[in-house]
Length: 375
Image (tube, rainbow, N blue to C red; front, side, top):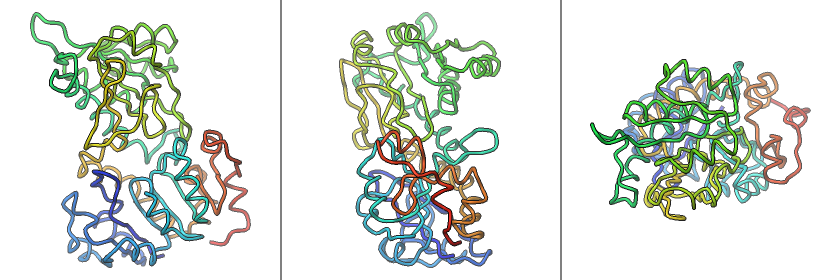
């Protein structure tokens, strides 16, 4: 199979979809890999490093899309990339379609097959291709929040861990999954008082055991969110409904009752955000203020630590890229139910139920869409 990785063009996105080591694995299995020149520069990977392990270096994104049957990226395709997709070509990347009808419409028009990292599942009910970036984003959320709390950044002027004789900051984490647990880990390590809110009692028990009572766990109710946001210096939005738009747990009215200069970090912004007042920001302009509360809503947070993120992500995605290349896309999707959960768009149809519901579009089950298709 011919596989291609273009350079990422989203604002301040430095990650790359394949590393030279990944290229070497694919080439060793008899596949042809095209890498756009400069694709790995942001993480210190030169064209020569790719070339040494068998990659063919293309001089433009257009050349990569023209050559490849399978496109492997990191972030959702930008409009000019969507225009390069062709009917029957496969795209394997993060998509986050639920809050992005324009991208969904472009993918449907292209006739491509689009597989989303964020909805691929595993036998344990996890999201193996989302998890590495959720770990990074959860840890970064506390760094970003601590910085935004500084007075010069518009924050209340609170040090997360306090000092002897001065109480630490209160951190509220909405969601106890991968993002939330990693955010809690860093916040506790920095000396903050941490509360995690979740709907799963089993997960709250796991967190209580994991952190040996160093955090407070609360069952998610409106009252818990009301009281938690009122006293919080920093709120981390870490809720996730796979494929669907994030639930809006924190309203504008909540913000009005928060301290002036408090900070919210919305890690769920890729799926539309879990604060009513959230809107996507970039690393160039990461924050804004609504109702006196500083909002950090960068939609590609892990891109700021691009080298760590690239290797963490490609460690997880490479086995699936190999599976798609070795078996053929249709065969791989038919025989692997977990990979099939990643299929969001197939030849003009939305094939993931939660995505279709969020977009208000018709849904064709993935297995039905694959019937009768070749390899």
